[in-house]
Structure formats: C-alpha cells, structure tokens
Image (tube, rainbow, N blue to C red):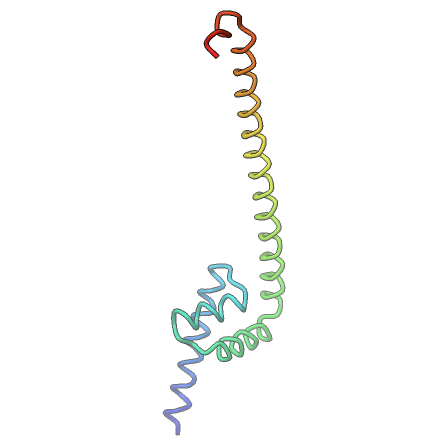
Length: 115
C-alpha cells in the first residue's frame, strides 16, 4: 500500500509541474485541463483537483494571475480593433486613390477616347 501512495504522490507532483507549465503559457484552468488531457492523458478531474489545491495554497498568486490574464485579453482585443481600423483605413484610402486615378483619367481629354 505504501507504494500506491508514493506513486499517487509522484503523479500529483507531475500534474502540479504540468500545471505550472500551463501557467507559463498563460492558460486558464479549463485550457490547462484540455491541454493536459490531450497531450499528457491526464484526467481533467485530476487536473481540476490539483489546480484547486494550488489556488488554495497560493491565493494571492492566482488572484493576480487571473487579473493579468483579463488585462492581457483586453489589451489583445484592443490591439485587434486598432489593427482592423488601420487595415480598413488603408483599404479605404487605397480604393479612394484608385477612384481618384480613374476619375483623373476620365477627365483628361487625351485619354478619353481610349475608354
């Protein structure tokens, strides 16, 4: 029986270590559960249980971690909106320039007969 408890303890330590790796990749609990199930064949219930224990033992860390994740998400969403605005503006300017070029061709007497 002692062998069972030591192998269980080493399994929990391994899951703990893998959760720390997930945190390094900025994953939340659900993402971590999914990743460990897919890549390490860890039952999501085990991952969730170990994660919850880590949260209890490191309350401040996890509160800060969650806030940081939320801030990063907001920053990423803001960056996406800015990128979209810039690409929309560039596309609009480009089409305006194309229309302006075409209009200038049409208004020139020497090119009018080619159209």
